[in-house]
Image (cartoon, rainbow, N blue to C red; front, top):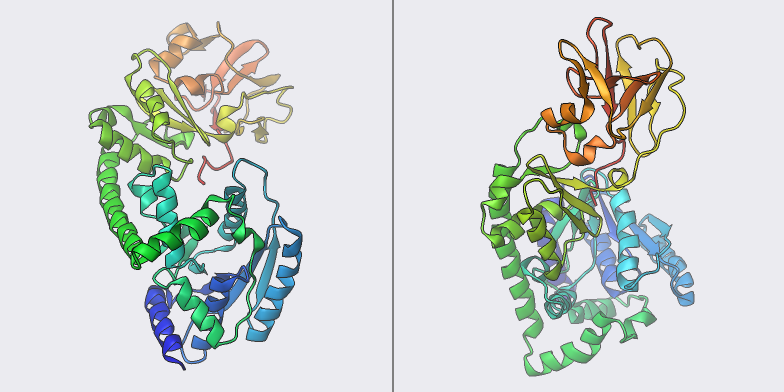
Length: 442
């Protein structure tokens, strides 16, 4: 083994040490230089080291005619190395950023494939890390963005690991030439209309000509910023713990925070805590868009402010913040009678309802609040539904989709509200499961 191969092998082994006992390693294999070197390196290390089972996955985006030959190239390489290969074809949705759309398509596959105790290995190297830092700096990124690519993060039910982040492209090229490897050169990597390619070909060479250690220094800065982000995450978790209080509407299954503890923080700590909370739910807002949070937080007590974000919206109601996405943003519609009360009734864009106990007799139907409804309440006579909902501090966004049970024209139950959700003597209650979809996790 050459000194270069020995050195790279030792560095990759160190970065993969925490994952040696995983159930499976899968390489994201584009056929390019970095993933080709990573695949070759691991296959040869596996001859003398005890590794988890190794496979590869190639994502075919279909964006270029020349790319149609790449799956076969990847198959040939994997066959020669004895590595199983999965080829996945994806459709890239058109949008403002083709790079981002292609990345989203790739990572949707990676997320679905990576199961519990499995590791997805990708080939980003130190040059990529420096470009990422510079790119995000030019876009005005904060600490989270400038920490660039982490060495590992969660993907799907497992982990994504980048074992080449401390290795330069020049070192990968040298290894590839020593071992006479053949790899794909993507023509789009030369297209300088893409921002990253412009940085790679126009800016980085000039920086490294003046400062030869520029890429190493930028990668080191990214590591410092990751450490700073870790401290900010710890602070966010402390602040969020005070706002993550229990409430009587846990059954809604929604992400929710108590507003008062957050409002008592400084503006910077508010943004830090909310960014940490929102990050798994939506693409985070840019600096200018945070004015929406200020409007929501400072609105009058009787207002119902909404902060619309990329993948959903934040609403304020009943002293809490609520994250709404998916079906929660659609107006529920119901038609027809409840023909089989003994079985659950699925509601369009609104989950399902069912009875516990013996279903009441008569012609039953589910409706939604229109205004003016009244209901007979034990020992209280008839009461306006609006007043009953106010008494229980039902969040405003729930009121228009809370299933109401009618027998004929008579309102006889309001799902999930104790004392209103059934008939004690007849022994039945109306239960609503608001939604069967996930609540915006991305």
